[in-house]
Image (cartoon, helix red, strand yellow):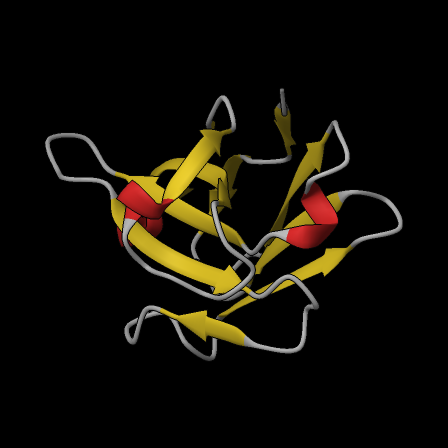
Length: 124
């Protein structure tokens, strides 16, 4: 069984930065890809970024590339999402998730463990 515990998030102003963390229990973290998703009120959950098991390959939603950076530290069983130049439209609940495989995927159906979610609110 794997548990993902998220931290970070909060209320910031437009242009600010935030870093989200996702700490995993269990031994499977380092053998699987990790992803971040978000869900804004009244909207579907959407893909944000994903990183391969090794950390070598990362993939981003086209609209977020350049502002968000995903990373991982397998020695610490932790993944991160660095968010810069935040905009009000980035306001959402952010979720980390563990992929079933080692390679990057964007479909949430490929992820079988999810964090509890953390609120990010960006004021104008």
